Length: 196
Image: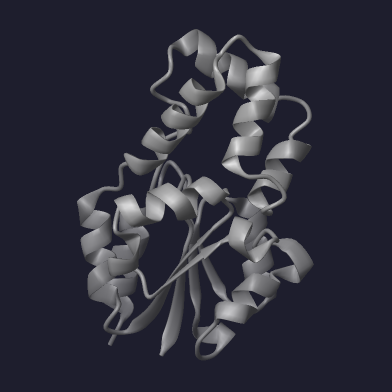
């Protein structure tokens, strides 16, 4: 069985954390967490912090109450949108591929997004960096090798990050990069067409 790795953020989903907050509060959070120093975010993605830790940190730096931050984060993670056509196409490909959702993400993804969107029904395996304690590009793409079934030379990755695509290609796999010109669904349909 060949392996098809599929990224989450920017590939099958484009929704943001805290997107349902007022714009002014959302921008505050963006500046605090995703501004010049994103070390805390990377550590969160590697399981060093919980969502509660991050919400407490943001609350201490703003006038936004912790409970409001945490409840909004949990709600927004639970209501992320994925095109049903993408999920249906992935489901069809599962007859010829072992499908792995592989994401650089936070604990809230595993806690809220996965169960709410029933992602275990759509993918054979779900890999979250927060659970792995490393990003998928760390250690030369060690996580890809860990969850690979079959040969790397016959595996595919659908991903929007050029860096991650380069790491995967260096391992011997085929990276299908998501761009403005070529979207996820187009790559999935190409795999459908190319599959015997």
